[in-house]
Amino acid sequence: MTALDPVTLQVMIGALRAACEEMGAALIRSAYSANIKERHDCSTAIFDAHGELAMQAEHIPVHLGSMPDAVAAVLDLEQRPGRDWILNDPYRGGTHLPDITLISRVFAASGLLGFVACRAHHADVGGTTPGSMPARSTRLEEEGVVIPPTVADSETLHELASRMRFPRQRLADLRAQAAANRIGTLRLAELAELHGERRLRAGMEEILAYAERRTRAALGALPNGSWSAEDVLEDDANGAPRDALLRVTATIRGESLVLNFTGTDPQVEGNLNCPLSVTKSAAFFAVRVLTDPDAPPSAGAYRPIEVIAPPGCLLNAQPPAAVAAGNVETSSRVADLVIAALGGARPVPAQGQGTMNNLTLAGEGFTYYETLGGGQGACPDADGPSAIHVAMSNTLNTPVEALEGEFPLRVRELSLRRGSGGKGQHRGGDGIVREIEALTPMQFSLIAERRRHPPRGREGGEDGAKGRNLRGGEALPGKAEGALRPGDTLRIETPGGGGHGPPDG
Image 1 (cartoon, helix red, strand yellow):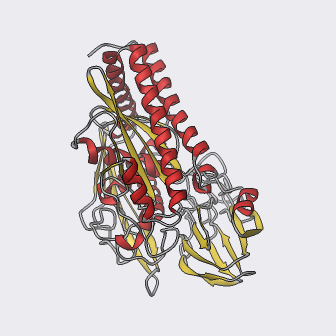
Image 2 (cartoon, one colour):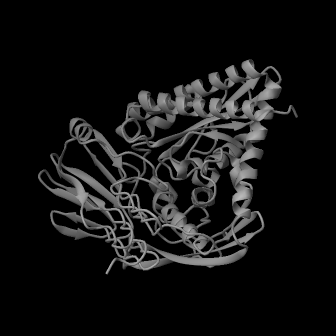
Image 3 (spheres, one colour):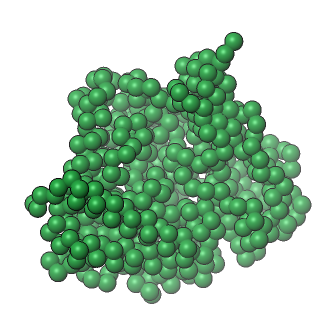
């Protein structure tokens, strides 16, 4: 391997990161749907020739941590210049069906140089419910078109889009993803020309090794031991409300960490089930933010971490289980769970809202999807931020002007949900209030958590407020579907974050 000096390594890290960011910017600027162009619900990354994540843009954690499994799904397939791959199958490296991944190989004179990939949440991918985020699905096929690893030529993209609602819109977003990958391919080829192929390959290897060393050093600075945590999901989509138990034991030995989810409930009838790729993604995110978040965002940072989840449990669901909420809600709870367990080894924040507050609306000629921010947990030394998307989401909100300009909706209120953060020495962040009025008939789907169980405070801090959903003033459960007539309102009050430390007095 060609040795790299530290300066050259940092230059290469910056160049690969810039290429990922440019891919993301091109995708956002080229996309049709508000979900991508306004909320930035998309992610981009570069992989080496072995399919290992070499660099990513700081986009959506639940996308990025699972994308290596998508590249692994095409790694052994026939690779040739000009051949791209598309997939969304949650059991072959996907997350949930609206998240479609496009993967392109990058060839150089000496052969395969690496891969570029992007993933975007599409406003509709078919299925029984417009928007493809049903609250009450029980089988994967009800949630939309399942795409196994497939050659992504023009004919295939047209055929897939034709099986979804508003195919011209879907095709436009897929073409935006293809444009993003073309930029990534070009930039990686330019780097090979600038540094030489051998040197670029060596650079990607060293980035992985450098990230691994930094993560191992951070884990090595923590005490050895095992700590367990439990939490629940609100499984109320298909009948009487019940709690689904999640459990993890975190074991640190030297510079390695094992996260064992044995004891978690079996997969459920509804769609809170989580593919293993998503569970790993959430676990890796939680460890990264608690160890060395400034290490290069690559697969090297994950090498010291082993994730164990028994097949058939809620966190390693098996087909044909539905997974629409597993990607958005269960992943959020996994991050909460791992952070809580590692609280035995180091100071950690109180719980944040722990939900993405997923809202899908669909009517004549449109589908619309968004996630809503909320309050985040207070830290040992700071208040929690308010009205923000963090953790597994990290998206933006849809601006009122864009929402009202593109869809038959009126925003009646968008405000801070004051006082919803838990009290403490440091106060939890406040959630938000989003109330919309339907201007034409439409269907809605809600998938949300923390409606029965509040985000917990820590070290004597008070809990944050539970979230609420209301249609015309009538309370709705966390998972709900229904119709809105012109003039009907839908109000979502998102949870506040937990407080940290006992309140003064």
